[in-house]
Image (tube, rainbow, N blue to C red; front, side):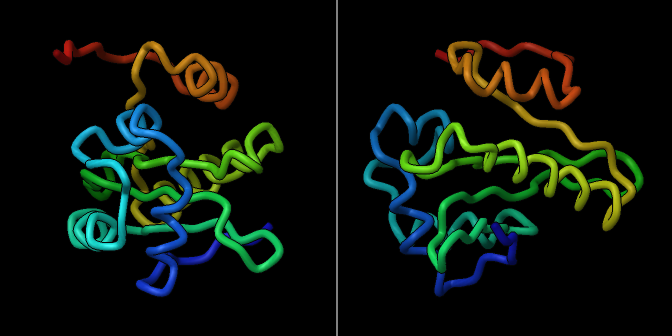
Length: 139
């Protein structure tokens, strides 16, 4: 498992990580299914530290940072792991990697947002030490 900066050569593979409209809504609520190169390109312009996880020369996970305020806070977002690699610790490793980026590059406390129905993510984030700090309603 290797983490590397995502570039345009990874965008098609990143888009393929999302397997359903429901999953895309959890990963990127403003996205439209199927996720595609141009949507990832737009994300790359709005967010920072786009990161992919590579296993056996293929992209198996993706995430990034947004709303980075150096010496204050940064949000981890767009976390997605390939269906074939879920449950193998890759999501955990990606969150830990991006959390380290927040601290090392920006001296910023990492935060993330998650929908309350995403039980798998809620359990993982709790195990990693994240705590609820706010709730917002989405209709």
